[in-house]
Image (tube, rainbow, N blue to C red; front, side):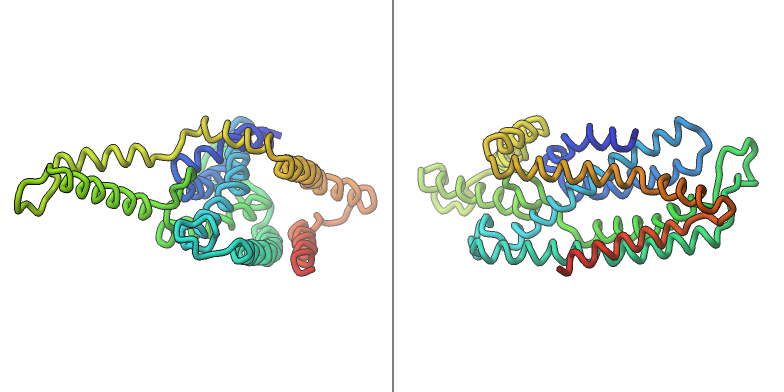
Length: 307
């Protein structure tokens, strides 16, 4: 409940923060938040576990918002959408490229989820029972058991963070696609002012430099300020107005909320429900192979993406 609650609260402002401070940075924050959540699962302390679940809720909000925002921003930056500045892509082509990207993403996520479920089941079976770490007194830190499945996700999280840092370009909301585009716009603005001043008689005769260094710096600073993304509050209010004034977007939000709500209820209850049934039918049986069960769920998702 703490994880879902933190996701509900932070989910409303994550989009604005990503638009203002950069989507790549928020994607990296996802990796950090989930690493923190995993590390807290080792603690035998209610408040530490609660704090870890809050971190997991924040990570979930980031996962389902900023990654897709970054992807769309990257399409704009590469000129693959009709909203790009070079207008090289028609509306049909824009939908084709975005549809391909999201299709590959969903298909790949299902494959990775299936493999993750199988791997988690193997890791749990080979890690033994959950036990306190022997090098620490007080039985505060625990390892093994189901915790080992969470520990195994630290490797791909670190790998994803490294790939983001090395391969991704930053992009923002408010019409600013990347740092490169911002620098290009600033340079164009400085050049335009230079030409205007030269044509207006500001430049001296035979002078090839129209602005002094101080003036160039001043223009760049003003241009940077004018190109800064809007604040998170303004972005949130703008998003609310857009949803409220657009019936199709509003209906999609309602449908998505109902679907996500039912999905979260299922995620919250399927493990205890199956455990209760298993204990009622076979009280002495071994623990259920939750990893294989999860992999079967993800296989159904994969079949849905192929239909």
